Structure formats: C-alpha cells, structure tokens
Image 1 (spheres, one colour):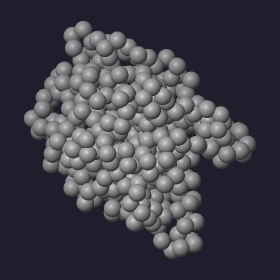
Image 2 (cartoon, rainbow, N blue to C red):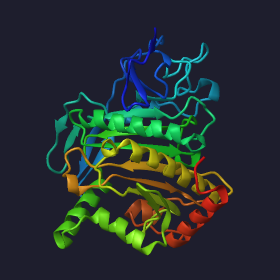
Image 3 (cartoon, helix red, strand yellow):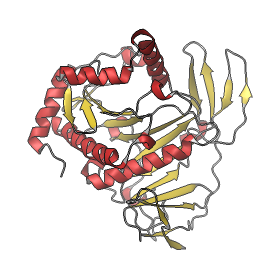
Length: 376
C-alpha cells in the first residue's frame, strides 16, 4: 500500500505514520505535501521482545540501564544490506518506501522500551522496568551523505522531527526525559554507516541533566538569577570563546570545555525544549548548526568523529530549572590522533583537555573564514 501524507505539522513538513511488520511505528517527515510513501512492510519478522531494566547505583545516586538483548543488534553491514537505506527489491530495509526525506522509526534493539512492570530490591539494590522508548532518525536516503553535507532546509526538517518526537515521547507514561543525539564516525563507535541519529525517552533524569539542574537551583538561590542566562551573558561579554552567532542563537566553546573541540549552542530566548522554539528560531538553528559543523570539519585534515546532543528539560522539571541547548564535541585532538577516555576520565570522571578553549574557538573562527561565514 502507498499513501500521500494527509496533513502538515508546521506548514512546511508533512508527517505520516505507519506500522512495520513487527508492530513498530515508522514516521515519514517530508518536505513536499504530495510525497508518495509505501506504508506496508512486506517482511516476515518476529515482534521485538525487550529485556531491558534499570538498576539504581546507590553510591552515585544514578540509574544504569541493563539491556542484554542488544548484543544481537546489526553490526557494520555491507552497504547493499544497509537497514537504513530505502527499501529495494533486493534489500527490504527498516524503511518500506523506495525514497524518503527524513524518517523516524522505533529501534528494533531498544535500550529502553515500555510495558514492563519490574520492581524489586530495596534501597541499595533497587531494580525497575526499563520503560521508555528508543527511536532511530534517518537524515537522508543518501547512504553516502553526512548531515553536514545537507542543505539548511533538510537540517530544519530534522529539527522538526526532533521537536515532534519530543512532544510525543514526553507525553508517554514513564518517560522522564527526551534526548535527541547523533553519533558520527566509526571512531565514536557507530556501527551503521548511513547518516542517522537516535532519540531516547529515558525512564529517569540523566545524571548530567540532574547535576545541571542542581547547580542552577543553587545559583538561583544565591543570586536570584538564571544560571543558563548568566553563562550566556558572560560568554558574550568575554567574547574570546564565541565561534559565531545570529539573531536567535549563540555558538561558543564553553569556558571549561572537556573535549578538544566542543561547541555549545544557546538560544537567546529561554525555552525548555525544542517544542518551545518558533519557526524562525528553528530555521536559525539549522543554519548555525551546519555552519559550526563545517567549521569543525575544517579544523583537521582528517575525519571528524563527533557527537551532537540536544539537551532538553526533563518532563517534570520546573520552567526555570533548565534551558534548551545543544552540545557538539569531537574526540579528534589532532590529525591522526584521538582523545581516548582513559584512567582519569573513565574511572574518575575527571577530564583533562588537550586544547585550550580559547585556542579552539579561534581555530573555529578561522575555519569559518576559510569556508565562508554563510551556510550556502
């Protein structure tokens, strides 16, 4: 069965959902209202059975996911058997249609999945069901592309998909935080070469977010002001770590950057998550994001293994406790050299950066001058 998408979400992106052969959901986000997509999955595949659960680390006050079923997930398939490419007669993939713009589907090997009711142990050994949801976001049908090679209009569509899924997953029972991210490059650990990212609906508030909220609350109690707003104002006033900016967003290397190349994107207006951005702010983010990624690529005559993370307020956080922002970092510290998380970082969580943040910011500014300040 094929179908033309029946409605639009924001006036420029058309959304249509279908069900895969094993009951999982697949959603097309198209840039034309008359796109025709195949909605029937012809594969004979068994339903997903998730065995995930979470365990509480009483020493650190953190939840840890346990997902033993993920050991069998797809690992470096050949290009002609890529599960993220559009389907062909010889490769029936996760996407039934022979073409797409951006597509989102439920992960067949989820770290977290809904429906469980595990509750065991006591205060020191507490176990809960790994309720939540994990989705895959494919940025383009082109297997050989990268997100940075796509036009701002496509990046805008990705942002629309992120925002749509943030709203849907935030309303799902048991989800406490929604996290959109991209792992890029084999050096990062990517096992599928097709350009894609993921979305996690966590059944808990992640440790990094919890720490930031605690810091923000302490700052507000001491000063009466918002920590995120004060950090942004301080970076703008100093200026040495600003990479680039536009009317709605500022991109800067943070004062205490942990990674050799690390850039944070702050909206000038306080919003808690992607759903709070208007159309102009989403378009401005798309252009600035691609600008910065291309600058990062220009820093080294080498690959750019990187992680893009969209940090959003937990579902039940107070409005003033957290501000939407993006963080992008690379483990590349020089051509032919990577920053590995060894003893201090992995064992103790104590980072040591190999590049001064001010130097990294200047190199990113120079890279922008080399390729042109505007994203074409």
